Amino acid sequence: MGIRPEDVCLVHADGTSILLELADAGIDDEGYSRWAVLTPVDFQAGDHIEIGVMPQMCCIEFPLEDWREIA
Image 1 (tube, rainbow, N blue to C red):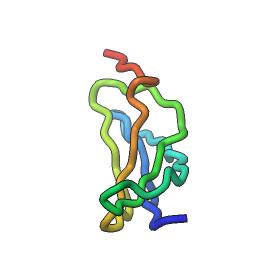
Image 2 (image 1 turned 45 degrees about the vertical axis):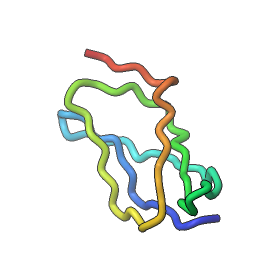
Image 3 (image 1 turned 90 degrees about the vertical axis):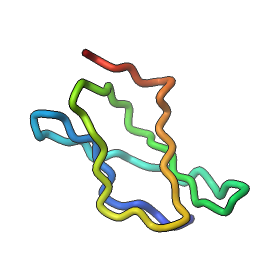
Image 4 (image 1 turned 180 degrees about the vertical axis):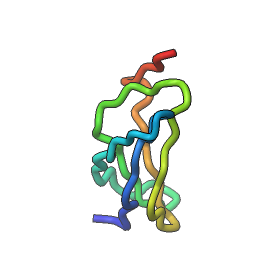
C-alpha cells in the first residue's frame, strides 16, 4: 500500500459532508501513489473537496464519468 491521503471529504454548500472511501490504485509511471475514490456521490452546486492530509507524490482519482452534477 502506498502513502495514503487522509480525511478526504466531499463538503456540500450547507456544511454537511461525506467521508470518501479510497482504494490503492497503484503507482503511476512518474512514481505517484494513486488512490481511487470508491464512494458514489452526486456533485451539487457549491460542493467542494477537503483533504486533511495530502502526502507529496500522491494523487486522488475521481471517477467523474460515473458522477453527475445536480444544478
